[in-house]
Image (cartoon, rainbow, N blue to C red; front, side):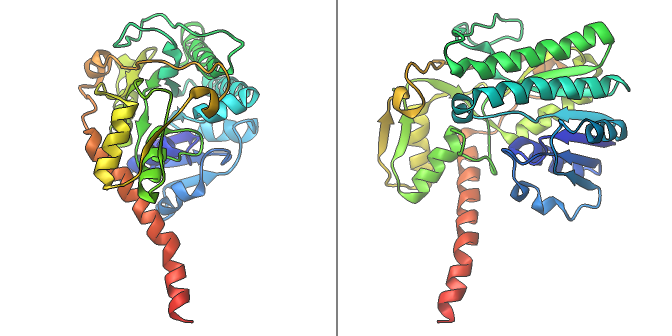
Length: 335
């Protein structure tokens, strides 16, 4: 089959592209590199079935052409990361809502299936865990830019489901929970790469808030497997489905685990939210998905252990550091 991935040079998009190419599919990647990176897909250039286009989905003509060529569209292009969201709320809203509208509009002309990536953020301050897909969304006030991302992704979901109900445009909406693994950057506030990077450098491992807030971390390979199975399942069309792990850990415990697995001597320090992000920043205490629907539709449940995930991320960082230092070693040998 031929797949279009918007945001294909991003963390999840690049892993999805790699998986599809390895099983023999053709992949069209579209990315403006605003948060994605050529480094994520450079190793995929050897596949003659991979074609990449460095442009924004706001290029309607190109988007229409690529949608027309594809059998299925994975819409992953979005503003991501808490830091980016807090610092650039206008960009967050425009990128997420406008981008989804453009993709759905282009796909609707040919009734191409659109997989729309949403987020666990939409559950907001709901405290009734595990979060089921039919649970209420409890967002904070509009005066807190923290909630602009959740609101924009919720609107993405409304758009996708409205296209399905009103125009019979096939869609699948997936709410991704803290997907982690190699190639993820800590640039926009992602906790796992930040912790691992700090631990390997011997720098303080910085925990925001009290560290008692808990999350569930899903290996990107498991997320890609769940995504692939969903688009192959007719019953998933028109549905909202959680994708993630349901193994819960506090951020403080994660910092200790990272320190242990990397053999780091880094101290663990705590930074108040007000200093880390903005005054009055609000966070969720727990974020745990119900995976019953995912398992019912696909027969799959993410199961990679957290220690294994940490080891994979650490190995990736270690390899990157070796590649950066290698030229210096060669130069010094020639002095």
